[in-house]
Structure formats: C-alpha cells, structure tokens
Length: 362
Ligand SMILES: Cc1ncc(COP(=O)(O)O)c(C=O)c1O
Image (cartoon, rainbow, N blue to C red; front, side, top):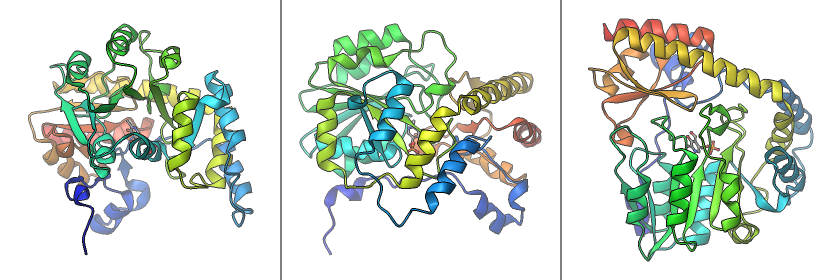
C-alpha cells in the first residue's frame, strides 16, 4: 500500500480522556466523574434543542435539506448578517477542512501561532501545505506582528484563535484592526471564535466589521456555549465568494437533520445562553480566587477554561487528579508541558475540582 506521503507527518489529534474510559479503568461511577478536559458546557444543551432533536429522530430515514437555508437564515438573524454570508459544517472542524481543500496545496503554506488549536496544523498538513507556527508573546498572547511578518508569497491562510485555546488569552479590536490592514487581501484571515459567547472583555473585536474586505472568515460553533458538541454543528461567516468555493469541496448532507433542528432551537434559547455565561463567570472567578490563595499561576481567560501552571509538570497533575475522578487536559501536545487546561465546570464540579486540586498540589 502506498499512502499519501503528507499524512505521515500529520499529528493525530488526541482528544481528552473520556469519562467512560475512567469508569472502566478506575471503577468510578459515571456520576462521580468530573470531566473538565474538552471545554464542553457543564449545564448541558438547551431543553428546546433536545426537544427539537427528539422530534427529528422520527425522520432520520430522510436526507436533510442540502441547502440548509433555514439553519443559515436562523444563524444570519442571530448574528445580524445576510444568509448568503453564512455557511454550515459538521462541527467547525469540517469547515477547517473545507478551507484546506478549497485554498491549499503542497506549494502553499498557512501561518498560525504556537500553542493554539491543533486542528489548523492538522488540516493544513493533510493537503501537504507547510505550517508556519509563530512563537507567542511572553504573556501567552498571539504575536500578531510576527505573524504578519511571517507571511510570504506562498501564504494562503492565517489562523487566529481568539480567545485562544488553550491559553484563554485574547486580542483586542485595535490590535486586530491593525493586523488586518497589514495583511495582503489575497491572504485569507480566519478568526476562530469558538468561545466568543463567553467573552466579557469590552475591547474584544467585532470581526463582522471587517467582513467587507472579502478575505475574512469567522468560525463559530454550537459545541461550546450551546452545549451541542456531540451533534457536530459549526458555522462560518464570510464573503459569498469564499462560500462558493466551499460548495465545491463539501460532500452533500454533511450536517445531520438532528443537528440542523437542534441548532435552530438552541439559537432561540437566549435564557440557556445567559445562564451558561453566568455560571461560567461565577465559577471562573471562584477558580481564580483559589489559585491566588494557593499561589498557582493562572492566565485570565476569556473562554470557558483556564490555563494554569504550577511547580509540578502538567502531566503529573493530570495523572494525580484522575485518582479523584477529575479529568483535566495536559498540554504536551500544545508544547506547554508546564501547565494544564481546566474547563470551567458547574458549581458542584468546580468545588470538587478545587478540593482535589488543592490536595494534589499540597
Ligand atoms: C478553538 C476551537 N475551535 C474549534 C473547536 C472545534 O469545534 P467543533 O466541535 O465545532 O468542531 C474547538 C473545540 O474544542 C476549539 O477549541
């Protein structure tokens, strides 16, 4: 067998440990486990989304409407843009693949930051593109000046994760504006805003303002605040020209009927979004307070997770917390072996995590 030679170098995405695997290996019951490793919504999905999904289950013998016009319209209304500027995918991850298939080949490159979401690198390497990863600033924010300087004649896409997973740090509107203006309009700039609904910073950019430049793609997801990670639904906001290219590389029906229905219902449940945001803020502040008490270094986060560094290796903290049924994310794969990323849980999960964490590091 002869493989595509590019995939030899594609790092395999390693997801967080599942609660089910811990049940098997350590004998915990599923209810005892506190899973804070994949930035999921601890409050669960909106009950309206669950109801819509359940109703749709009776019709899963029928393919979905491949235009997804009603879903695009619902998203468009939610974000205040025309439906022609909305595209949907099987999770936002699928849209990263559309970007690769539509714009990259082995002669091109992508530019992104170090210590950022791994899927950008993986999706670039799959099609043989080079991946340029630029070091972060000392405060673990993305270094936009260096990214801009690293762009060359073969660069087709720049990936900016804002707020950044796994550091939780963010870039302000003025920095982003300066950066966009410094980049040639032939190069696509992708802003991955998977966590934007959690953001509280006043100077976080409204990237919709820049869409009329034509080379901007905003990526968002239903996997985080909307609590639909298991259904796989994400979207892009971009120019109709770029969307037309996506149409050429997408297989039909990639978003399921169930995800489509749940997504439309989830958008209407503003109460669920508000409660999720409030719970996140309350528990994040509780975590900060405890970290300060314990002398643990944390990076203030605009997402639903916090990156922390202690005097122990991240992989060691991760292993010791498993003994308490708590799953966090070690970050060796992100080249951050000193730290761990902890998803902000609900009230009870946060208390359980902080109690176990205090025992582990003392
Ligand atoms: C920054 C970032 N973008 C995208 C995603 C993937 O989202 P989806 O579930 O929509 O593929 C994640 C998930 O962890 C993420 O952290």
